[in-house]
Length: 473
Ligand code: SAH
Ligand code: SF4
Ligand code: F3S
Image (cartoon, rainbow, N blue to C red; front, side, top):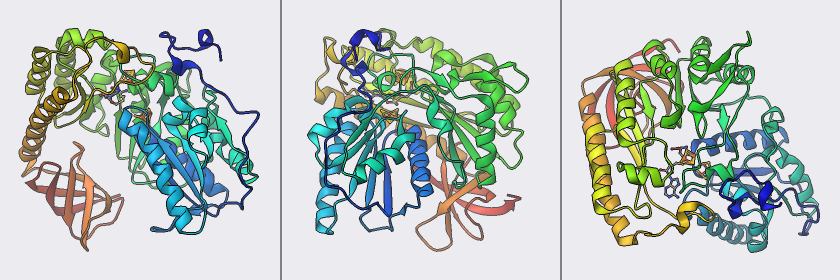
């Protein structure tokens, strides 16, 4: 594709998306796979995509490989956000080929997700064992690629058809009590460090009616909680059944009416797209959980500007104040990058100061990783690894302190937990509080129950709890 035709305003190399390969390389023909394994890395949107790919394979009569056994077909659903995440795919391919050989079979390997989108044909060249490379907007074509792969053809599909994928996917029939529902894809924000606008394409909202239908199907299949997903979920917009424009708040209001759905969450938001309706929704909708993941990235306005974030530290803090006014018990979460090019010690200290002010209930923090084709990768002042290590350690110490403090402040509280899985020991159950803390307890319960517990003891990552009663599920 001509560089000028891509949507990327930076004209970086990543906008040269290859499309389906017409002259595929050949491998040995093989028998149709009977078992599969989908391994998803990266964000929750990849988890959602992984579930949908598994459903498509299931429709074909392919079943999940039993625990501990090599699968006939492995889908590596990859993440390109940081260098380490992206390189993982190649070590995984090597491991799979070796394990397959030892087990006397050669698994069919498909690389999906954001590395597939960013590197496309490159993966085919570098890894002869891979027979399918499929991007995040094209994975509905996986079954068709699989037919070709069984014939010995290698195919790459990193096409980006606007939103065709969802219509081509099978109906939702199985799910977890806490389910994901992708409502929006792509990103137009172009933060200067980030690959997502290139790997996931432009911002697109799925239609309102499709989302209401999918939410109902998920509830019928056993979902009690739905997390609405989007790379920029707060940018979602659509038309309701009366033809009125609605934003994310309107969608949440309407999904809250779905009988049997007990909890709604959404992630990830960008400070630029948070409107008054969404803020108000936190005070109005009981089913909307008191939790907000709102990445800030840094505390220095100069760094934020260089990152092309459209907020300042002050505008971010003011926004949080409005959310807290609407929902005083709101738990906050964020993302941080340390060592963005040019970040000085004093500027990093501003990140620590912001953390001290917000007191996050949980957070994710990363060392800046230069991503090929993004503007920041070629900026002056790349920060030394040791400096980044030191900053990350200091930031994480502050974030861990606050996470523990938040959990400790919850001790003694009686709250609802949605049981998501069994614990390590017999009779032990694990679930999430409304504030997204992991809580475990013993007693008479089942996966999918909404139970009342008293929080007893706090650790940095979870709380122990005592069962009080089971709420009608
Ligand atoms: N859409 C979300 C999150 C996108 S990716 C948002 O706008 O915040 C998740 C997180 O990965 C980002 O919030 C950021 O903290 C981190 N990240 C993205 N690119 C990175 C890079 N090049 N190096 C280090 N961390 C990065
Ligand atoms: Fe990446 Fe999020 Fe920025 Fe979009 S808003 S470019 S996904 S960090
Ligand atoms: Fe990774 Fe792609 Fe998600 S790069 S974080 S899997 S959008």
